[in-house]
Length: 312
Ligand SMILES: Cc1cc2nc3c(=O)[nH]c(=O)nc-3n(C[C@H](O)[C@H](O)[C@H](O)COP(=O)(O)O)c2cc1C
Image 1 (cartoon, rainbow, N blue to C red):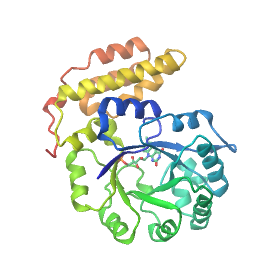
Image 2 (tube, rainbow, N blue to C red):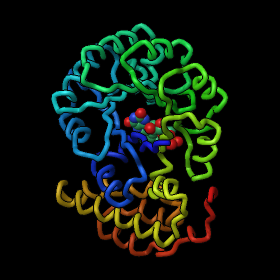
Image 3 (cartoon, rainbow, N blue to C red):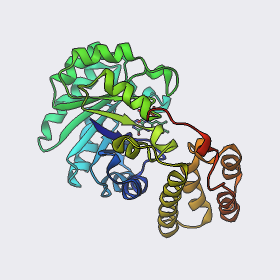
């Protein structure tokens, strides 16, 4: 069963995808880039650059309101030789939904059908879609009779945003109803979570992991190896990934404020590994020297050594 790294705006941009693959090897089979969108009828060059930067086994993602926006984005991506494009049908962020994108497109079958028809004009592209549970009974037949070749389902409603239980019964109903290769997504935080889904749905094509990979970047590698990494090995790899990102930002960004604003989010989900005190110190740092001091204060073997991870 494949492990796919979920798209996470603000976290899994090209440098993270590239350096994560370098540090953690082949744990992740495919990385999905965060969505690109149209702004005032154009695609932002830096979004396009990010999506098309070489990452091992990467899929681009489009969020769009209608067939017109879809074509604009698909044209830009295919001009850059992108051959795998995912359609975002689940983003719950109100500014996107309000404009009919993400979960807003999933709520409008007519506009969705228009987008799916437009896919036929890109025969060289392998399309997939990522959706939530909303309106699946209506949308599944549309997707199945379109160029979409596989489906990822985040097993929540868009009103749940990113919290609350994943609804496995409804996911099971979709699995039963679809003939498209299916990937599960939602709240995989440990090998035990992964095994639970893999055992219950052994026919899945893949399992997509989002925040679990930010909180424990070695998670996919640990699952693939069926071996828990020691706290020391995990911290060592977390710092190696960090150092590659920091070095990259230092050479590509202008000035300490920009560098700090890009590197600090790396730690947003890592509190379970580095402890509350260190996480707070990092959050509070407003200069690069204060940030580096906060990093130096991270206990090398943190409380994580004590923390048992289920599943092995
Ligand atoms: C900060 C953040 C940014 C996200 N950005 C995207 C995105 O660009 N495209 C997308 O399809 N989903 C996006 N998602 C949703 C995730 O890909 C994923 O579906 C969701 O987090 C559930 O998976 P998880 O519980 O493994 O994190 C985002 C989620 C978060 C928390």
